[in-house]
Length: 289
Image (cartoon, rainbow, N blue to C red):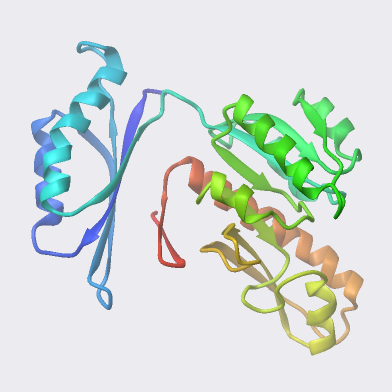
């Protein structure tokens, strides 16, 4: 596939924003592949995602084309008070998968990666248990076992952060990693840690949400993928899905049906992040088509 560039923008809303950006892209000779925008009228904010083909025939190849666009876009961004992100597809993001003893989300992500559905390189599987080691080995992914206890949490996280830095990790995915991350860890990867929670947040936060849902007698269960923040299960939501249940379903039924939801919402969130389709603002996300 040919290489492409993606520009993500958020800024105060005003007339002519799409035209100004499109004109600059035209002047730079960009062949636009996809464009999408959104307005938050209540807050007066504008969001935009543009993807275009990168021409590698000029000086410096595609990297040179990306830098030339960056230089041309900077004055416009300053004039219109834009926060913006520009990235190219020439480098595949490096991903670390964290898990504990439940392996369904890990298995799903590894299989999707092997099938070419995720534009990334899974560099390592990290776990506080060894049950995932054979699965990682089957897919040829390095496995690192870092035990975590209340007494050793700080040392374990220090070891994890060192490993992630050495491997130049871009995205951390918590594939049912049943440990709460400290603010230090979260702060090292802002909006770059994706978690899956086995509940339709904000309902039933924390541990054992299926048990809580069963006790409450709900008729819908769900799963939520979100970016991790310092507040437990409170980060910007990326994707959610639900399944209908009845009084006949027991906790074990909820757990079994919920695992399918967890796989789906986590894989979607990871794919959208890798495709640079997500913008965070406040405690919300814009997920572009």
